[in-house]
Length: 459
Image (cartoon, rainbow, N blue to C red; front, side, top):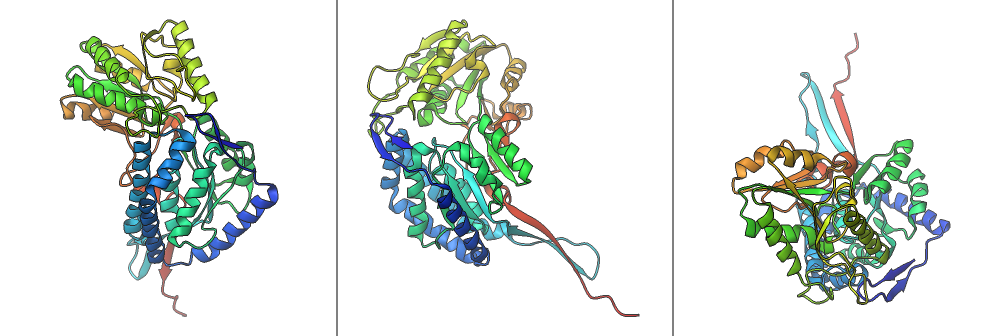
């Protein structure tokens, strides 16, 4: 399994697949560590997590450069990703004990009744390449601090990032095997899920991968959190300030080189402002700098792998052949690396890939809608339900539409984003379960009811 620099197509490193004996040994070590880690006072776990935040900030340039090299993230965005990982560590270092403290419930006089939140064991995290640090830390920070131990199966093209994340916990002073990593391909994940030493699974990835993990986990009766794909609508109402909205639209579509589950992908624009928005948005997309991701001036770097760029181009080509109008881009750049330019499609037929599939790259589908009613109908006309946004001069008007949008995360005049302080989840084919906030830390705990009464008196 190879890590390949997507900007140069040069091999960075070849990683040996872990054999069964190695996987078995690591799961054994994780289980053994859990027995002592669960007994470690949560105050100690919080202090270690605060130390992890310090390590991330101290080595931010090192970790950011590694992300940029392995998957092509623009360097400024990579630095921001490391800082966000430190933030989630800070957040749970401050709040984990509060979120997990016993909850006392009044029942009958003379009895004591409460709910405790106890760790369940090693939890497998199957994580993607697009946010190679953030996706791992938003899982690991809460669940390790809750007393579980983490077993990471990262994407093979970012195994270097997996090793670096392990080094964060080591540098922070964590005991061995609280966090461990498996270098295995996707086809061996089911066997790990089936192992009795694994007690839960969190996956961020495609809907196809989510179905496979859910099937295996369901058969094994193990809890899961699935954060899957998205085809997020970006609704532009007729009173939206178009210049500012077009700028935010370009950013929402191309951040992380367009490779984000919660990137805006379908732009639903009121007919009264459609022509002007398309013109402004296309110019904003055209003005973006595509190039070397190590250059701070780059807005859009390469796609993470050659096959991902090829799939994206096939979707664009099929959509144009079906009748879509290509306003900008639409061809891989003729240069070393997996570069696909910012692309704008309009007049896209209902059954074209640009409307029915997730486009994981800097390609925008712009759709004209007659009014709010049609905007909501088109927004919800997708198997996905991860994020959505509404853009308007009247925030109350936008907020009124949020109740009609079927999505786990809805924003008004703000790009959809994850934040440690608020829950993050999807619905429909975008998955289930919650990450982040007080809700996320309770996904992999045993919610135990304890009922205590005095001994019954002898007659």
